Image (tube, rainbow, N blue to C red; front, side, top):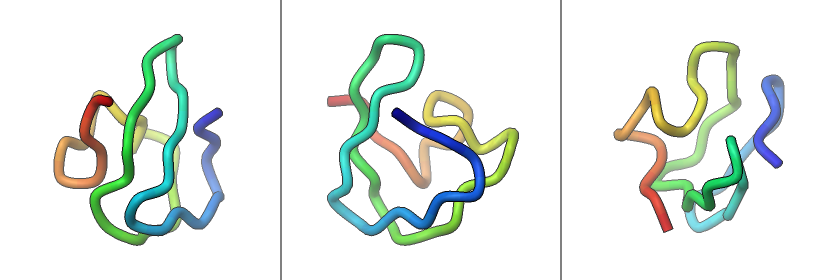
Length: 45
C-alpha cells in the first residue's frame, strides 16, 4: 500500500485506492504525491 515518507524504486508496485500502480522513477513519497496525482512517478497497472 502506498504511504507517505516511503522510498520507492523504479519498478516497485503499490496499491492506492484499490488500484495497482508501478513506480516510474525512484523517489521518496510525500503527501500530495499519491499515485493518481503524479503521473510522472506512477503508472497504472
